[in-house]
Image (tube, rainbow, N blue to C red; front, side, top):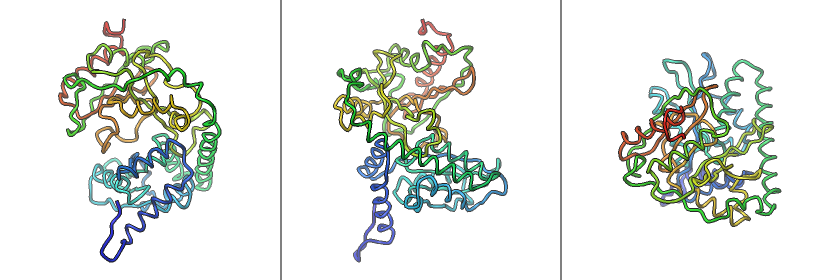
Length: 376
C-alpha cells in the first residue's frame, strides 16, 4: 500500500501511514474494527458509496461536505477527505475514481461534484469501517438540507449523530462482558452454505459480476411469513445449495433512538435454512461484539464469513449493484419493501449461467406474489 524510494519513504507513503495510524487509533465499534483489520490484512479497504443530488448553485468545491465530515467523524479522520476533480468524465467513471481512492488507501473519504443532464451531484465514497449505508443516507440528507437551512443547525445535528455513535461504542464495551447465554440458540454445530456448481446460482469467482432485479406488486405482505422466510424456504427447494445449513445476512443494530447515529453499526448475522422464520440473533449487541468473548458467537461469525450466499437484511445501498466494485460474498440476494404493497427483489453475482439465475429470480418473484405452489 505504501511506496518507498532508495532515499526512504515518499511524502505519499508517509501520509498513508499517518492515515492508517489515525484509523487504527480511532474509537470505533467492534464491527468497524473488523472492517479496518480486514483492510490492513488484505491491502484493500472496503468502501460504501452514494450519489447525492444537489441543488443548482450548490458549492461545487464541496467545502460544506468537509465541515459535515469533520462534525461527524472528527478533525483527525476528516483530514483524510480527498476532493476529486471529476470534470469532463462520465458519472460512472467519477464514482469509480472516488471508490478507488478509498480502496487503494489514499483517502478515508473521497468525493467529487459532477454536473449531469439531471443536475449537480456529489459522488461520495467512505471507508466501510467509518460508515454503513445508513450513515451515508443520514449524511446525504443533511448535505441536502444544508443548502436551504441554517448550516449551524445541520452541523449540530451531525455532531449529535457522532455522540450517539460514541454511546453505542461505549455500550458495546459494557455489554460484551455479559455471558453468552443469549447465544445458546446458535451454539449448535452449523455449516456455511456452499452453492451447487451446476445450479441456477453457480458462479465463477473470476467472472463479471451482474445483477438482475424485479419490482413486485404484492397485494398484502404476510407478517406471519415475511419475505425473508419465504426466500429461505424457496432456496431449499430450488436445488441451488450443495451443502451447509447457514448463510449470512446483515443487521443494522441501531435502536429507535439511534437513527441519526453516524458510524459503522451494521454487522453480520447467521440465517438458518433449518428454521427460516427464526430471529437471526438474540440480544442487543452485534455478533462481532459477542465474538470477542463467546465461543458460540465466534463459531457463528466464522460460519457467516465462509458462506457463499448473502441476503441483505440491513437496508438499501446508495448505488446500483452494477456500480459496486466488488463484494465480500460471491452471490447476493436483496429483498426490500419499496412501497406499501411493493417489493424489490434482486440477485447479483458472477453467474455462470445468467439466464438460469434470471429464471430463479422469476420463480422467487412468483412465490412472493403468491403465484407458485412453492408457497404452500
